[in-house]
Length: 216
Image (cartoon, rainbow, N blue to C red; front, side, top):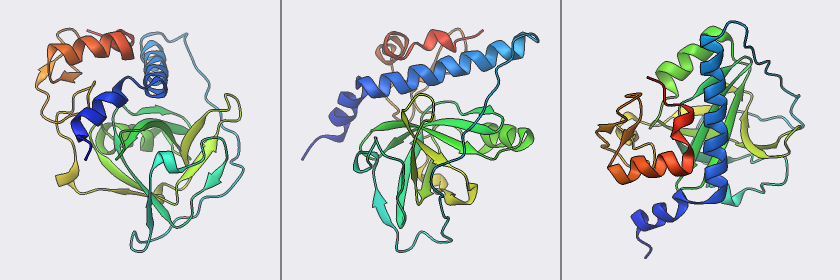
């Protein structure tokens, strides 16, 4: 049997994971720049989805699915399935959407976009609900190929298709590099990122470019 700790460590240096996290942090830096510069403004747009996601009322009877079981080159709604994931980066709000980075049970990583969100609702969701370490179920997950960048993401157009997992499942004080719980060492500059060790902090700077979002 594969040691889950070793398996996670192998995924931390996966090229797709690095790309997803670094791109997300670049977007986070953009939102921070906007807050400090009234003349700096990014316009976010969306293209109508090619297929429609239907929401079920219950998780009962749904088939568990993971990211690697989805075709990353094809727009498809996996009807009758449920994708269970952990939020591993700060959630960002860009009207009309919010942006997340998620990790599944295999430690595979992908971006996730939730559309149809107002500014007020978005601020609540990113600060109170969809925060680092929270776990969610996505009913009938829709793997969407971006209209502009042609890259995959999990897209949600009906927020009722997202179900929060119980609090006992959440990862508290999650390390921003290895995603393990109980990380009590914080970045000395921004005080926002927690780490298990000096090694994790160093790797977060080197691989995932923490300096993009490190603000005092």
